[in-house]
Length: 101
Image (spheres, rainbow, N blue to C red):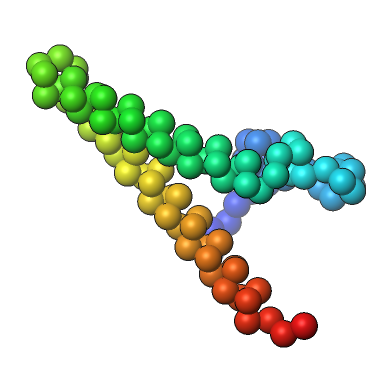
């Protein structure tokens, strides 16, 4: 297991303590779960579109191979992350579905 020193993480990675949150506040600043997911999917789509545009520019003779490869890898990593999040959501849904009330 990795040893993480709390002072070494940027504050944006550390959630607020429960005592600093109001009972009705969401961690996402009031955004619903659907809004957060739609925003994340939109960001992944934007990353893919940017990479595709850079590849097209490279094929037409303009563009830098290094920046194109970086853009393609960013798009790939963001898509893989989105797929892992989807897998976790589906797994959580299946676990809830198995519960008996």
